Length: 373
Image 1: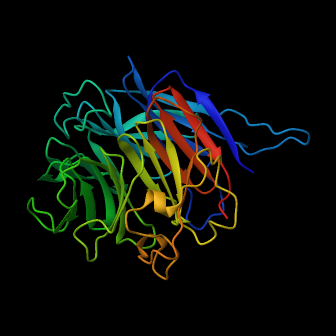
Image 2: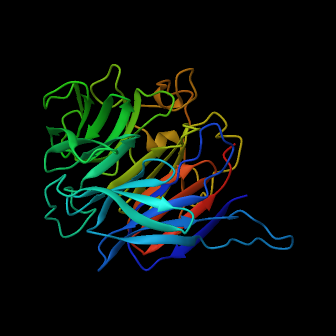
Image 3: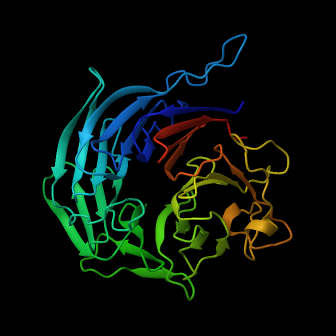
């Protein structure tokens, strides 16, 4: 059953992330973190959805997410990631990278560790409109932060020192493997870096053919790590195969404005999610069952077929991954807009298990639940 609740929080939300659950556990996510931006006082907050999906015998009832605790954050929250069950890492517009600890006994947050000048102060007035914001990614105990100040910083959670710094203009970063990261930048490049190598040169550079459109976000396929999705200033969704091709495998016409985040579903990667400055939150369904079952979540946009959305590519299931099949006679791609009509930016999303959370400039957090078939 498709369900959704909107929580007005009186702050513009820049980032939302689910607290991780053990990979072997059947537990659904129950706590998420949120970070704010462009407010007189910005915060990092933790929220519980509790029995979000509980249904009364005679009527459906959705309880609002409950605020567990929050803490003041110096500057705008540019990025936010869980390091583990108790620790949260943030990147700030002031150039600071901070680790916060959640004390579950008394439901408080405290500052555990900080690197005050990890990046130069962002001189931007507005984010995410500006592209100077830093980003972070975690692979406990290692943390990588990036920014358009030209720095790639490698930290370890148990050390106050910066382990390593490289120079490259960057918008976002993910771990590809334990010792490799992928980054995107303002000239349409996807770069691969080996953390074992010294120096400032990437091991591989991928780029948009004949274009220098800024890329803002990226994610990798959870089981086929060579498959990478990116989004950028033109709102287009790009699929890359970093094993062999130096240009995108697929280009899909998508949002009407900047794409701020893209995420594969961590356990059902035929499903992908994107959000945009145009106020939309999209679910992309490339599964083999797409013709046989109802849409995931709200499906407010209806079906968008391959011929409308893809450029010379199709997305039928293959032995490798649904996102790399190139037979145009077999493909079908369904796209659904999951939110009511909105004119304000959807800045961040995260999906885990049956739940999706997103944050907006409308000072609202949306939580959605619907099992994937």
